[in-house]
Image (cartoon, rainbow over all chains, first blue to last red; front, side, top):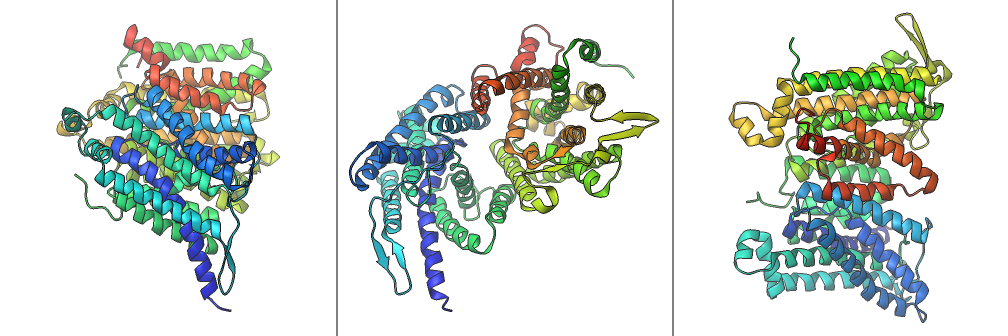
Length: 293
Length: 319
């Protein structure tokens, strides 16, 4: 038996997972980096993206790519608006106190989850891929849609990095991250930056959800795993470091695909949770990061 | 021995007396509900030692409750030891686990501390599922009939009797309450509060704050284990649901509502919340939505809880 096709398949699956993970984790990392808060409801924004894609597929007629493109636009806008509202109604009022933010986003997580359960029911819902095209390898055919996921993720992350490095908005964000008070003294609207970053972080998760739903299914509890994996990525990559997050997402997305081939999913999850805890205890700057300021 | 804070001591005694009388006034259903409330209040009181008095917010106390449940339940199920021995085994398991986790987790602070405790707790929960052939996993294990009664000092106790269960829960609750009174209202309690208010200053005064926090963590985890062991043995069932994330959140919510850093706050919070959830379960299955909303509401507008507000306004001795 030849090992090459297995290796190729595992690599491809790993890349697909890594791309979605990169988008989702980047949202969490951005929020933590700029605002110094942890958003526990991040996985629910991912789930809402997937559910929005399913709703679009049911409500919008036409060939599958029409509702898909609609979902790709509507889901982030809807989820971003929700996150903006949560920021306005809750986070701003507790003054972004780190501990209170965790407690209240846990509350938000339960509310979003249960509202979705009440509205859409407990069943997992499948959505058609926007197009069917099979890439032929000598050994097997592979869904062209999955290559599309990888492409979209890399384009979005590239665009985001460009925006952060070369635009005025990006400058505002980096200045706020570096030193909130000084940024404010220089006339940067820090509160607006905060609301914006929180919304953008949620939008990234929602896009991840839309992209993933043709190959997984939409379900009200589907936010748990992306949340856990995003935690792993953000913490292993170094809290708040964007390049670290990207590197860690690729590493962990790839290895998670390989690991779950050899080990049970439960064991893989035990490994990830312990990894997060032990990295925070022994190397709080992340595995790749330098010691922080 | 002199007693600090006599008013609070008298209030504790009055509360215990009131709870004893309550069993003659309530319906059978409510006696059962109050049995659960007393046990969960012990859990919340343990949580409060760390969160309220020491100012360390843990998101992983389900693992210590679970250690109590499984330490007691498994030794009864597999080794067939008597219930008092199983009870002690559960407490010991929780103390050992919380000491070890505390050694590691206390190297971190605030947000990291919350995430570390959460992750350890999830790992413990997943381990229970992974070894489900031994632990019963999410199906759980039902303790055999032989483990439904015991005799101690010539006293026969039947764990299927509502009255016996209530009074046993009340006894354990009373012992923990008075124990915590001594622990929190004396010099050690003042050290915990000092760490909460300003850890750097406490260290500057020459105290080993890591040791103080580790003591608080272990006591907190151990008491959570007392509650877990009692819950598992009393109702004769152990299952992974006792180690779920939701259990940690309930301890947090009960403490927040009742008043963090007040001795009787957890009892008030647990009582109100448990009765509310019981009511709601008749109306909707999505009572988690209420937990979520309450977490937000309490954080936004009511961060000192019921007894904390009373303390700040009128009764400074209520701590």
